[in-house]
Amino acid sequence: MSRFWSHLVSTLDPYVPGEQPRIQNLIKLNTNEHPYGPSPKVIAAIAQASDASLRLYPDPTSLALRQAIAQRESLDAEQVFVGNGSDEVLAHAFQALLKQERPLLFPDITYSFYPVYCGLYQIAHRTIALDAALAIRPEDYLHGDAGGIIFPNPNAPTGRGLALDAVERVVAGNPDVVVVIDEAYVDFGGQSATLLIDRYPNLLVVQTMSKSRSLAGLRVGFAMGHPDLIQGLDRVKNSFNSYPLDRLAQAGGVAAIEDEAYFQQTRHAVMQTRDGLVEGLGALGFDVLPSLANFVFASHPRRPAEEIAAALRERGVIVRHFRHPRISNYLRITVGTDQQCGQLVAACAEILA
Image (cartoon, rainbow, N blue to C red; front, side, top):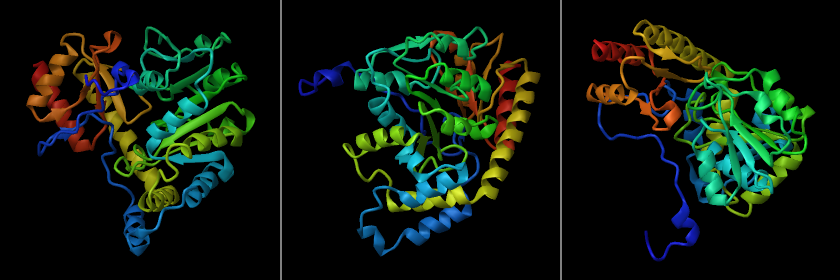
């Protein structure tokens, strides 16, 4: 702790990102990165944008990217906001929409950046316990005492998802507060709440290109909702950084949205591999939660998760282990290629033997 820190900084409990090891030949299944590269059209678009125009500022409104997203989702560009990864988009939403007099509600087991933002922006919050099966119960969010609501769908790190009618119950049941649905993993089997946007002015849907479009290294996130909500995000963005997306990110983002065929091909490949991974882990006695994400959440009744994670690391396989009391015996395992997941299952068999 430094004597030069502000009081706020001294009270923060920062987010801890997944490890990015600098060891060669590891099977890296700990940060939910896509196992396949981005669309070749993305690479071409970035290369084309890498010219003398980089001396100029990018479009501060990212209009071409917003229009591409809007066209795909049957929205207007005024209903789309883009930012430097969905984490920045979420941060702006916390400041612009979720900092209210009554507490913000979110699950007790969820994306661990939510309480970090609450600490950074001094937002009162209350966590809602998942049920015994680690699932979100919509009825727990219908008591009318919230200043705002946010949860991922599918949830992270569990991978469990809510059906669209269950999401709608929460949105419709809280007409006077903003409900943010964080859909970072929705493309791997979930149903997006974008279908509800034109009916509910209090709904904000946040997505990312880091997962299903293989662009974690480019940092492109976006939100969709009523123009009033988007204007709120814009006011915060333009009070912080008017140019969150550079020219390369905007060009790559447009190409990723427009290459629908590649998007469909690779996301379905991940879903197919996930099914095989679940089957392989189940054959070894793991309990695997039903997942609609590009990862699975698994525990074994005979071996502690922390012990398995350490033994996997010794064999060159990295997975994510969380120390939260309710999930300390679970491993979050990213869906890699068929070969990577096969090696993971083989390593687990060796450890359990």
